[in-house]
Image (cartoon, rainbow, N blue to C red):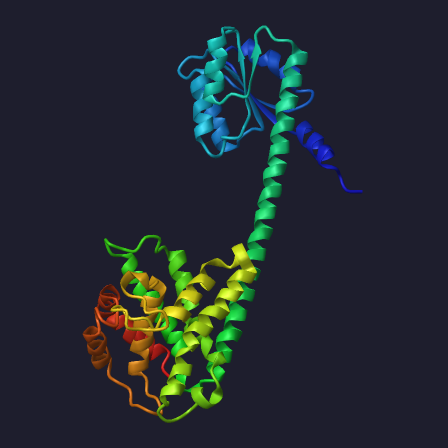
Length: 371
């Protein structure tokens, strides 16, 4: 039969250690006689000695005299409450002081209760037991909450794994239909991460560009061409130049991708998270241009979401340095010069500056994920 929480608390109370602190030996002896039949008892003749004992092994409860030389009980209590190791140990003041302000001082210092001298042994035992039970119940609640937090964190990690796996499948479907892109997905993901990190270190860094946000931006980057799953094979896989009508259809992949991800966001509601929000922005707007001449919405300047402005540079840079059946690869220097020429027209000038500042890292990413 499993023990109930109440049974566990009662058993723990009977095994508790009580530290009694008083500079009068007779008071220590009397208190020890009262408490020892039910508890393990430690004695300290000064506040300094009590702090030393607590430093070695915190007791379960402290009965503390107020009027003591060197350190009075209030100061001892303040120091105990300032120490994470003893902050939650209940302190019951034992004192001959009876003024209301004396009790107020004790509670302000962190005390849990007062016992006045001369004391009644039954009162001492009742107060000690009550505060031990409260402390142990609180300990159980904190332990239970910690367990629940751990389970919640584990479930959250599982949800993230499922989300990332779903993302992998979605992106894989788009890649499968456009085999010429090779490791484009991995490269652009790391390009976006690198550019965003550089922006985050600058004095005029965009608001909210934390490590967590950057990680979500990078995870969202592979979704930029997810809308291509809606493009007919005859257009998507056409080896030659597209006709005007075919190009019009090809360009709809931005809207298709944004709409697809918006439906996912609508279905998930508050659980959608930043990654899908960034993914939608990237999928729909990474073909917008700084001067407003891009598609599908003709956005300009900072009206284009930052995620899409980062992706625009990363996507074009990678396309330029990559060989395709219809074109040779550019050198890194030529690709950088091309994007620099487009600064303020096609690209956000600040993101272009990030690219120029991170060019060595971009080269390393290209080499690591070479086709």
